[in-house]
Amino acid sequence: MQIVKFSLEKKGTNMKTLINTLAFKTILVISILFSFNSLSYSGIYPWSPLQKITSGYNDKNPAFGTKQEYFYTLFDWEFMVFERHQDSTSNICVLKMGTSGPLDSVIYISDNTGLNRNPSISYFGNSGFFQSSIIKAVAVWEYNRNGRWDIYASYFNKNTGWQTPFPVDTSNADKSHPQSVCIDTINFGITYEKDTDIIFKIINGQTHNIIYDTNLTSNESAICTNPFLSLDYDFYVSYQKQKADSNYQIDYRRSAKLPNWTQPDTIAYEGNNINNGFVNYFSGLIGIFSSDRTGNYNIYGNVIGSFQGQKPLTMDSLTDNFDYESYLFPIVTDGGFYNHANVYNQKTDSNRILFSDYFLLRDSVSVSDSSSEISLTMNRGIKFGMFDAFIWVVFNKDSLNFSNLYGKSLQIIILDINKISSTVPEKFELYQNFPNPFNPVTKIKFDIPQITGNNSSDVKLIIYDQLGREVESLLNKQLGSGTYEVTWDAGKYSSGIYFYKLIFGNFSETKKLMLLK
Image (cartoon, rainbow, N blue to C red; front, top):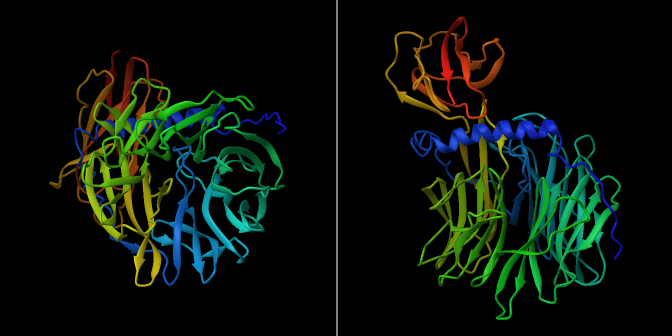
């Protein structure tokens, strides 16, 4: 196989993207860390009631865009791709999902012949901080033709819509489990299984040209299957490798600069392990997998390239647990990983989808008996309010003679702001921060009185340096009456005098605070 040298500036390596990423991670650190002291916002926006997304068809295998390192970007809507089965054929379909559900009708992107299955999608947005619109995308899937399973794709351009499907790999042997990531506006990384090997390619969505092509397991004699792909500044591909006892371990390879790849490293070995891909945390990636090492299947995570090692996400001796999805960067502690939102599939004599946020189980939905194939997906985040993210979890659920798609949603407050009193204050008031001086975290409290008439406006809380330059916007959103407390982590700033200013309409008040390191 010819290896083509590939030189491409990946999104995320430029300075602007790096600064945006660090800024967003700072906000997330504030949000998650202080949520352990006060989970007041966990109960404000509970998981929504169950909502039917599609009906009247056998719809399966939904997937939102592959999660990558660009979590500082919240979209104004997102694509969801899925299978639709009719008679002896199945098609790949796409829906635009907003905060209230589908925004338009189902679009068929396959050619309505034969069998199409196991879709994956990735997308590229314009480079806005916190809000982005999808302008390019690629969907990949398996297509059964000529007596074998091939890999096909369709490219999306916001100006022209979805293009006619094109082949990615139609060579001999079955191909399966395609996964994709977005590199830039035209280039996409794709990995899949082919004849017990793991293939990685880069394709140009516009021209359909293959820019880079390699077999990541060509030196492996063991069966390799079920790959997952992530772009976290570097390319990461994880996959299952069969052991001598016929169980599977999970390995991964990484490329910081193509065509160079690291030697395989192991994410999970003990017991039989099922690959579940990656989730992000502050310093990189966590490899997620289900393992029967304790008798039944539970979900674990292994922090890649870190001393943190493997940690359980579920420890249930009576059920089998699979298909973990999470949103936003988890905190890694001795007890495990904690995220803004978590969901997974629990099997006993039936399938149940379990929903949680942080470390608290919030809800569950019975979806079918244990013999049914259930898949679930979680989106990358739709912008909702100033610093809020709207999260969808979509899964197939049996209904009469159909398998329809259902969803539950969750509004996530990314900014750490707590309403500490519902008593209606008489006037606006900004209190002195506490502690002061501080290092590096302080709390800022303020009162919002009852607002009457047409005076609705955003409440702003802004940090300035001694020269009057804006350092950080802690708050910019509508609030009801009450007493609030905002946490500011100034760990990335130097010692000195700073000012914080509360603004609402014509009202403003400024106070001084001191950071001492």
